[in-house]
Length: 262
Image 1 (tube, rainbow, N blue to C red):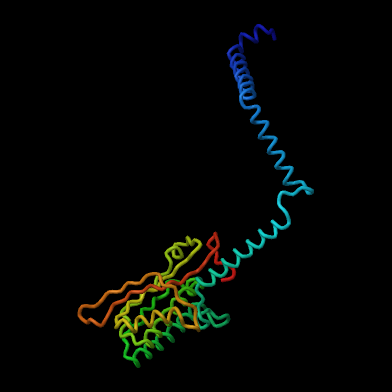
Image 2: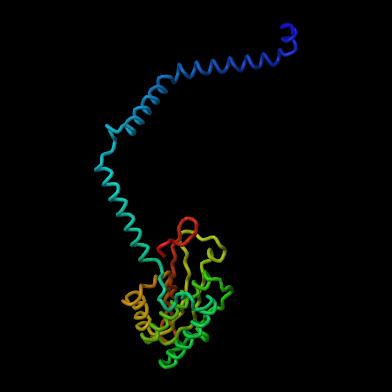
């Protein structure tokens, strides 16, 4: 093909390509003249740092530095484990699912009936008013993970009511357990919190003793308290109404799975 004919047919394309190449070359010249020295310095520093890090004869960090870093890491791991142990809820043996003892649902319903009867009998003997049915919820599902959480709720109700009766509390007006909304929606985060709210009506002394006992009993771990509201009663000046929310805490990894040690 004749060059003149090719030029006439592709003149616009060739001019566009030529202009782009010219701009590119001018840009390179400008960058090199303006920032060439700085770029060379940065590249030199990067090369030296890489050499320092990789050179076996001239390490940037000594064996002693590595030893200190490992010691700090181990101390942090131990501190985290200690905090987990202090916060995470651990039910008593009676309130755990037992292998080979039947389906999770049957185990829960059997235990629920036992606990309800025991608490009603105990409260009756001590003339303590408790909610009819002990305000125990019906299960909406008998999946093991649901049953486990309701057995933990049952554990907290049993602990607190027994302590209240022993301390001389006159009346437990209501018990309101609630699973963590994130568990019900299937969107668990790092911390899962089930709550159990109690409303107590009594002179302040027995209620104070009940709360103290939930934190200091040697045979069980303390029950974390999330909320506490005290209201004096006008009709009976010696009585107070107390709403206290106990927390059942579970710790999970970043994917919402329960930590292995739990």
